[in-house]
Length: 396
Ligand code: ACO
Image (cartoon, rainbow, N blue to C red; front, side, top):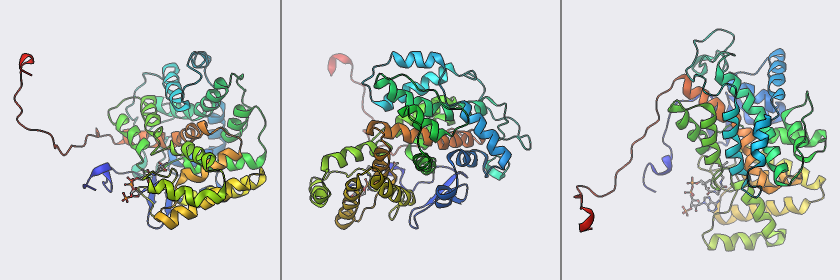
């Protein structure tokens, strides 16, 4: 492959938010292992960590949760506009439009993007060295950030319910984003295990260094465009099947293969036809994706719990065949599919769910970009024709 293609191995900027060691299968958020966060943290605490640069103290976490949970709802005008959209559209296209509508209705729309002077103790991204951009609590972007975090969960649930011609469900005050998302999606109170598993999925998807959608958000933010525009741009990039769209494609594949005993032949046939197997491979990880380690375990226990152990067995057989034939391991999207399916979530919603988690990382990166902004503008290796004379229309 020509050097620089796909920007592989190109360092495109500094970041103190998350880092990946693809050889050792390590992912950290603000220096803390994803394994520790998955085992011990909550999504809200993880978002605080990403935005403020450190884990919150008890009172800080309580205040942050109160703020974020109060935003798990949609403005009435946005709901009315969502009703007018085609209900058979791709949910990611509806999400893209939904985030854009949220931007238009945001009270801070049009507010300044310029960082405030750092004020000790009040920065959005904390005081810890280079990641402190000086966004005070009254900065328009601080308010937009918390609002958008909560609204994304309400929006994803609303998209599904509107598509199914169901009434929207109100959130329960004082409950987590994971709990209220599942409640607002299904209309039923989720049990503790489902809530914890879904919360862990949100933690695992929250950030991943300069991936395609995050980089897209940073490019948009680097022009000093507004926060919602950067998030819309990121949603557009996440939609593609080589990025976030792979989790929906994985479920379609599992439904197509169906029988665990067919996995080996199916994978071989697909590889012989030079097809990409969705949910496998990663630009950064050549060994185990540490997020897949957790999702695999969750898939095993959840599939058994809902009486679909065959779905886990099928996934495992595809993983085994893929490694035997191509030495490629699953990425974050592979086992997410059977986990979400076992939670009763429709496959079309898997990528929007990815976005409702990843919005936390996108926001962290937009704020980090703005804190020390320089327009992102690479150069192309020009391979086109040179010195071509302009031919008048009549002579072409
Ligand atoms: N199935 C079959 N072969 C694969 C796969 C796959 N899923 N992934 C990589 N390969 C092969 C390629 O065919 C290529 O083989 P070759 O050298 O014999 O031609 C080699 O591995 C390198 O693959 P690239 O596509 O060049 O690797 P790149 O780093 O550009 O792509 C990507 C990474 C896009 C994730 C790729 O692995 C892929 O398309 N996977 C399937 C889609 C997917 O699961 N995407 C989600 C990624 S995670 C995320 O974004 C949240």
